[in-house]
Amino acid sequence: MSHILSTYGRFPLTLVKGEGTRVWDEAGKSYLDFCSGIAVCALGHSPKVMVDAISDQAATLIHCCNLYNIPQQEELATLIVEKHVGIEGKVFFSNSGAESNDGLIKSARRYGHSKPQADGSPRYEILSFNQSFHGRTLAGISATGQDKVKEGFEPLPSGFRHLPFNDLNALTEAIKPETVAIMLEPIQGEGGVNVATPEFLKGVAELCKKHDLLLLMDEVQAGFGRCGDPMAWREIAPEIEPDGISWAKGMGGGFPIGAFWLSDRIAPLMGPGSHGTTYGGSPLACAASLAVLKEIADKKIIDNVRAQEAHIRETIRSWNHPLVTEVRGKGLLLGIGLDTDKMATPEGKLPSIHLSLELLKAGLLAPPAGPATLRLLPPLNVTTEEIDQALDIVHSTLTSLTTGH
Ligand code: PLP
Image (cartoon, rainbow, N blue to C red; front, side, top):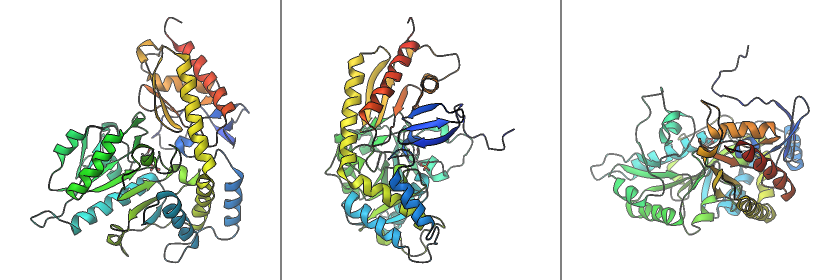
């Protein structure tokens, strides 16, 4: 009998080893990993640069609390601000995406106190979008635009409202005197791989300027090269400038670390005592992330992401498969839309989960995103050969699941 709290319905798989894009289960069977720990293992499994960085740092100093200076944080923050964000600002290191978003939400509340409503009461409301996912803390599920994560947890922290994604008119009409920020994923991951349109992102940025709202970009899943540019929003609307950004997942390549960035205009609001963490930004976590982000700062990884995206799109288009409705996403955060009416799915199972299970049996890990989308999230340094092998498995599995086949 397991003593693990059963918050997850797990796939029947136990991994014991990983190398690059391959993983092995306890029986020695190998799989291509196009899940990457849900967009985490940016450089694949156990890449040498990370193993070396973690081993060296672990042998020197594993943990140092935030009461003291941590030079690895300084180096990582400088790399993030100067090489990746390219806008002056300050970084706070956390341990996860949800924590990073909580930091942004708290910063927005501070902003609402510093720039209150006409009657002097603070602004506090954050607008976010349907199908978004912002994490599992209480504030994170409040910000999330999906009811399923909130059931049974009410009363939730108030001050969040959800609007249709990519609908600028609805957003324009929704802004009230108490509104202080707009939070969004430039490419929604968990919600089914939905890409913000350039018009929408530009419009959001303009509304933020006009109404003095903070533009908060959740790049937890999409950021640091997964979608091409290290800042996913730049792949869509390079001219916009957020006030806050959150990250986690790929920035640690598998070592738990997250961060949020605030522009220099907002950063002074989060002074000493305003926020904290025991573990966030430990020397070990920063050393791991430095190894990953230095590698990604080398343009070749981003070039590979763009080239492999084109290859995946071209290959899937050439199938003209009856089950495939479209390919959504950017870079290597891609979703294959499924025509579930044409798909043989056992009673009571979600089509996307059934497909993931069948792919697993055939030797490929790829997670669902909502009921009718399969996600492809290979490591950013995946090879064309690995993609061809994975897509062969996807193609034959889709064909075997097509009704009437
Ligand atoms: N934000 C986005 C866009 C995510 O995709 C996720 C996780 O899937 C989170 C936040 C939460 O991150 P974490 O699970 O590290 O708390």
